[in-house]
Amino acid sequence: QVQLVESGGGSVQAGRSLRLSCAASGYTDTTACMGWFRQAPGKEREGVAVRTTYARDTDTFYADSVKGRFTISQDSAKLTMYLQMNSLAPEDTAMYYCAADTSGNPCSRGRLYDGMDSWGKGTLVTVSS
View 1 (spheres, rainbow, N blue to C red):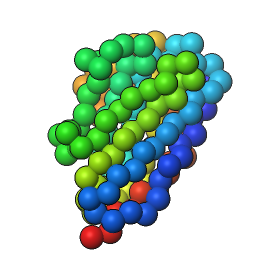
View 2: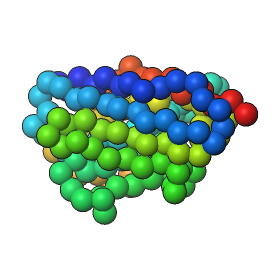
View 3: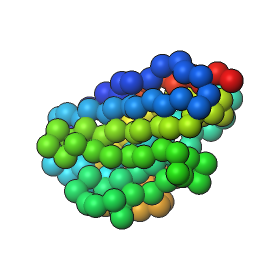
View 4: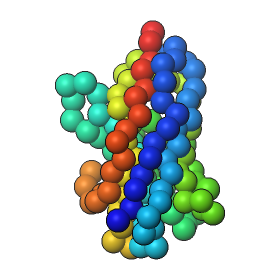
């Protein structure tokens, strides 16, 4: 199993930035795809960004709503995934979850919608106007 622990959430004003971190531990040898998801109050969970852990930036996929504002990256040595969030808006307010696909398959755009099998407990991001 893979354990995922998120950190970095908080309360900020619109237009500001936050950086989320996700530390992976446990049996990570077959973890090839990791990503970030979010769930706002009263809404369904949505994929934000996913990235193949061993690949270059071309194997990164973003939701249209965050493209150009959010950047997913990783520290491959530590298997830590980051989400740099710039130009935050109130509609970005949500619980943000780190997730991983431990099947060994690389990311695809479909992973924004389904296929992750390990989840963290989340970190809350609140953006005020």
